[in-house]
Length: 321
Image (cartoon, rainbow, N blue to C red):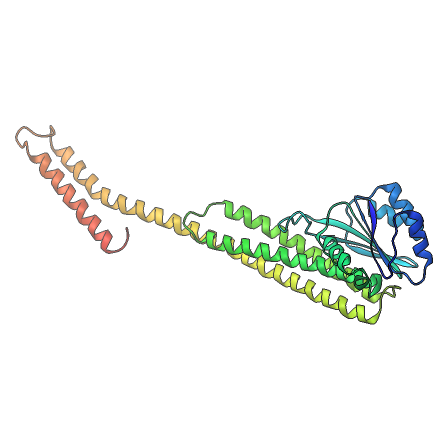
């Protein structure tokens, strides 16, 4: 399904013929959004916009890396967003294909994308304002919103890292902490690669001589690249902190093992002299208790109990228990 989102003049387009008419008008710049595209519909729209069929195939086909392809009169951009309209915690990657020319921009996506929805709401309030800087301005705003969503994702991961750091120092910490930390490290690595690819994409847009670019937009795009560098720096810092979570867990595990060994050693030290007494007593007494010394066993038991109490008190004072 496609629809005209914004235009520089008060125009409407509800059919492919209307789009063809807009293309012929030099005084109109417009933005068309295509969600859940149908191949025939998208091909008809591309024909009206005089867009190459290869760009249509790339927009419809499976996942590709973030990139920008330079055609004669427009640029074909593939990028990825992380937030949909359903909720701020939905961080699955969503492919967004963008065809940007001198007087038009077309966005193509299979799923709802938060950056597009935010721009659509702005266009509903002020369509001319959205198109004030032309298709290049819309492209900048979309990419800027996408990168801001990367920062939202970083914030959510930082919250999880804080939680894991606290949990990794707790005595009840389990192997689940390592599993969660490994998952977060993988997400951060994916985000870092994505941010670097986005930076290369924007650098290609700024460096090339596209018909929708001017000097003011080049400055705005440099602002987006700065945000991408922040994303890369934060991913590196959070990955280092996750390594710290692993180290904390190893320390807690080693400390827990030492505690267990210390307690077992203390009890073994208490039982060792008691075992010695019972061994000597048992080897030298024919019957236990002996008829000649009916109270001998009780004396031995009292000695053993007293010795155990003395050893227990000694270990307690030494803080070994």
